[in-house]
Image (tube, rainbow, N blue to C red; front, top):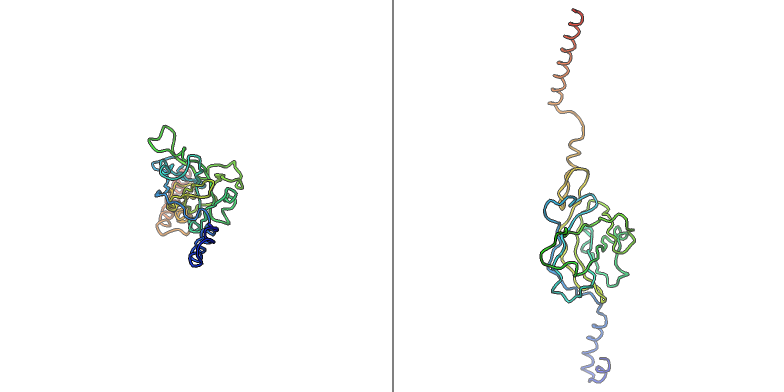
Length: 236
């Protein structure tokens, strides 16, 4: 192309050279293909759907069929703090993929690597078709792809990112916010837990007027009972 530019007239070359410089400066992966899919929590009453360090997603079955990717291209799950999702930068090389140990600094990491062959559409089989985020307690947070337990209640947002040997090529939309359970009481996964507020209200504190009246009545009854018992013993 440079030789072609040199063979053109001076005016034509002046118009072509900025275009060549623009093409040279463009980085791969800037124009990610958008997948019209929003990751969502698993439906139904699945046990352990939301815990203090994990939550469960539905598999994105059949969502990658019409894209220009191969069955072997890795599909990653991006986990991010809700306030850091807008700062996410898609990695272009395998060595640039953030790990759970980077979560506190970057605000996001990649985990649960799969491929399109594992997310085929159609009717699911007898196996449970879910993805449990934060379910691996044995891997090191410095290991690429480690599904390490989540460090706090959130909120978190997730999306799927497709990579190839050319870098990142496609991505889904971000999910809505997910709040993890806090404390031992059940909480709705995906919404803020109110257990802390309830616990604070249930904490013993200054007694109300009704409580004082009940305690006074019980004290009088106990006094009468003891007096009657003492009188009976003396009479006997």
